[in-house]
Amino acid sequence: MKFSIIVPVYNVEQYLTQCVDSLLNQDHPDYEIILIDDGSPDRCGEICDKYAKTNKNIQVIHQKNAGVSAARNAGLQIAKGRYVTFVDPDDWVEQNYLSLLAAHMQPGCMAVCGLVYEYAGTKKETIQKQKSDIDTTIEMDQTEAQMSVIRFDGICGFCHSKMFDMEIIKEHGIWFDEKITQCEDHLFVMQYISHTSRPIKWTKQIAYHYRQHSKSAQYSNQQKKERFDPQIFSALDALRIEEKVIEPDPILFNAVKARQVGLIPNYLYILIKNKWCSLPYYQKFLKELRKGLWLYLQCDIGASKTQKNSFILCCVSPHIYYFSREIYSYMVRKHLN
Image 1 (tube, rainbow, N blue to C red):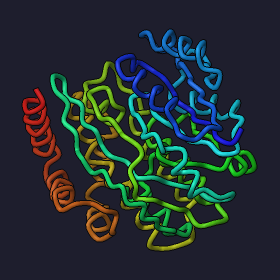
Image 2 (cartoon, rainbow, N blue to C red):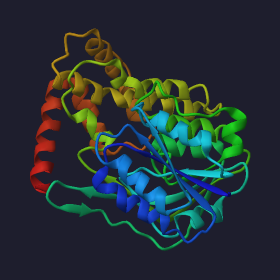
Image 3 (tube, rainbow, N blue to C red):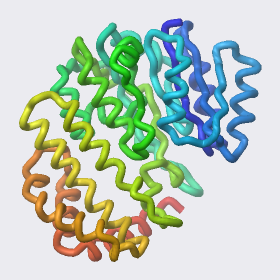
Image 4 (cartoon, rainbow, N blue to C red):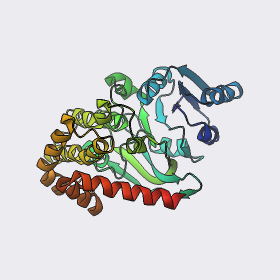
C-alpha cells in the first residue's frame, strides 16, 4: 500500500457523501481510505459503514468522541501507506488529488497542492473561484516553509492538501497534540517540517476544495459558549510549542511571536461576547496586546492592512472592536441569506 487517506468524521452528514465519493474517484489505483467516526451524533457512522461494505479499500473506525486530533491519530496508528494525506469530511478533492501530490512527493519531504475556498451559506452557496490548471511548483527549505506556514500563505498551516512521509512521522513520533483543540494541524505541520531532509514542494495547481460553513471549526469561536474553558485559547499554546521546533532564525522567531500576539483580538472578542471580562484573562490579554503592537505591525506575517487596522482598534478599545465585528458578521449573514 503506497497511500493512506485519513478522514476524521464528526457531524457532517450533509457533506460526507460528496467527500467520500471524491476520494473513491481518484485516478491513482494504490490507496486506502480510513474513515474515523468520532462519535458523531448524526448518521455519519452509518454512512461510513455503508461505504465500507461496498469498497474494499475503505476502513472504518468507530470511537467515542475525543476530538479531531484523537481521530487523526487513530487513523495514523493503522495506516498502511508509505505516504499519508488528510482530508476533512466536509471538503472534497479533484480526481487527480493523489496523483498530483504523488508526482511531487519524495522520501523525506512534504508535498503540497493548491486549494480553493468554498463558502456555504444557509440558503445559497457562494464559491470563491481560484482554480488554476497550471502546475507551477515551488521548492522551499525548512525556514522558508515554516515562514510560509506562519504567514498562512503558500502552503498554509492546514494538514489537508498535503502529503506526509510516514517514516518521518514514526521515526520522530509526530502526533497531533490531543490537548490542543485549535491550531493542532498548524503545530503538526511545523513539527513535521522541522524533520524533513529534502525541500518541501508546493504546486499551485488546485486539487483540494476547502468548504467553509457555519459549523466549520474556525467559526465556532464566533458563537456564544455554554461555559468557560481555557481550551479556547489553546491556539496560543500551539504557537508557544512551535517556538521550540522552528529553525534558528531571528526573523522566524519574531514572526511566531507576532502571530501569537495576533491571536489576542479574537480572544478579547470571545471574552466580551460571553461577558467574561471580569476574568483575569481579559486584563492579561489586553496588556499583552498593547505590549506587542509594534512587533505585530512590523513583522511580515501576511497581515492585511484591514487586519492591522483592526488590531490597532482593538488596542484602543476592545469593546469598539467587538461591536465592529458583530456588525460585519451581521452584514455577511444577511448577504448569504
